[in-house]
Image 1: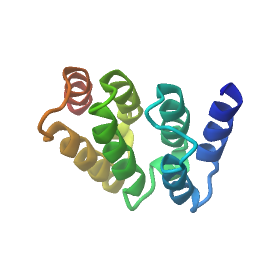
Image 2: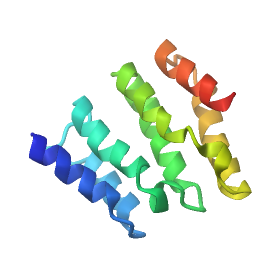
Image 3: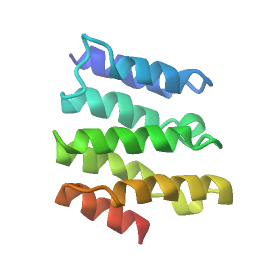
Image 4: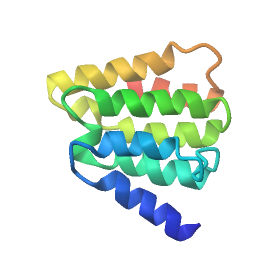
Length: 127
C-alpha cells in the first residue's frame, strides 16, 4: 500500500497537460479506493502540489480538487478539510487564476450539508 501511495503521488506530480485526465482516471480505477484517506491524499493531494497543473489558467485544476473535496466531505470530512489547505495561497496568484480559485472555494462554501471541518477551513481560506 505504501508503494501504491507513492506511485499515485508521482503520477499526480507529472507536469504534463494530460495529468489532470490521468488523475481523474485513477480516481475511478476499480482497484484504487478513494474512500481510503491515504489514497485520496496521495493522489489528489499530490495533484494539488503540482503547481503547473493545479494552477492551470483554465481553472480545471481548482474545479477538480473542489469537486473531489465536496464528494469526499460526505464520507471523510477530516481528509476533505485537509485537502482544502492546498488553496491557502490562492490570493497570491495572478488575477485570472485567483478569480478561478476563489470561484472554486465559493462553490464549496455555498454547498449544503458541508461538514463543520470543511466549512471551517473554506471560510478561513476565503477570509
